[in-house]
Length: 273
Image (cartoon, rainbow, N blue to C red; front, side, top):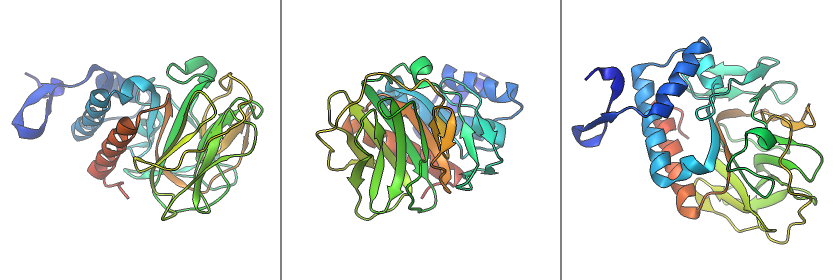
């Protein structure tokens, strides 16, 4: 059987490459990029792991910014949208996009109100993986229309992961120990007035008693490296970001499984921290 249709897995067995991975590769090529066989294997294993845990169905899209080339980094894994760099964020092969904290960001083209499937105005999740420890009151990724329709994550502000989940009274804060922005951070809300935060797959103390401003998903695109406030970039973050995901809430077991899958992807390409 042609190698293009087989993927080597543990124990020497073979299986067909996932159709979603092949479709993503085709989109990367159409965008002017390329995907090596070795990288196809790595991404296929990530997708296999996500589907096995059930996280794939609950995640609307992924951006693997630790790619072989910029075009590959900009094409999202699931919905295959091509993000637009604004003010030349710096791409480093197999590592990340670095943002200047002043003007640069990525416009993913993912509009939660239009493209959200698992993501709704009542249930939301966003995750980001930074590769350099950094603390600032600035967004790794997010978008909002007013304060009652918002999604945003700050992997570290002082000692906490912070963010926004359609609530109206400031940011949610999840205290980390130790405080470190590196690795996979996630925040989510499964309806109601409680927000959940995760540091490298480990659930932190829940934030309860939120005041929820509405049940509408943002109608503007998600930005990476900044916060899209009604189509105006604010809260620029001078960070090196390797991975972002958005969708619906995951269970504790799925959060840990996704962290392990993301970390395996990062380790395979040398981007792990």
